[in-house]
Length: 113
Length: 114
Image 1 (cartoon, helix red, strand yellow):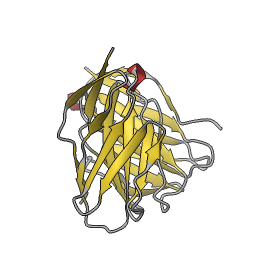
Image 2: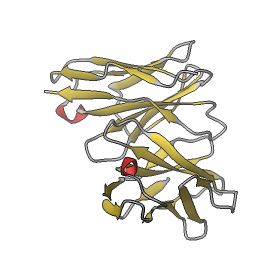
Image 3: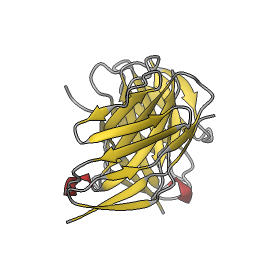
Image 4: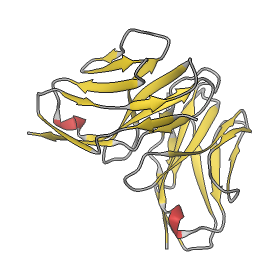
């Protein structure tokens, strides 16, 4: 069974600074997908970034990038040049091929002006 | 291209009642999953439908049931509501269950059970 752990219940960052959110996971599969979702107070889950486990290159999406360490089963999210609109709950999720998503408990990110 | 929509936005029920929540998938998506998100927690998988058939189920009792229609819209039904059923219910659609593709979430239905 898949498990996803986020060890930081809350994080804060100064506007324009960089912050890294941690995520570890466990799966017995060799082929799987990892995701970071953002859930602002409006509550709609928004995909931030997606990583396919067979790709060694770390995914990037504008100011968002990941550090994917497959052997360590670690999948951290780096947010550069943080903006006030980045404040939200961030969920790390994994999905084995053809299976369903397993979400971590989330990290609440505050952005300080 | 329309996104995932859910109705109603909010719902208040009393213990023992039954409720039906609705979801309209993103255009072209044949797979829909339902999640329960308790306050302050991550979403928990309830079940998934692929081309009108249940394709997987999480650790939820049989009083949680679902349907997917030929147009790929979906319903979540909960019978004999309990206080612990109070949560945000999210549906998410994806292009194809086999592809491992990204799921796109709706805005959710907030259910309160009194």
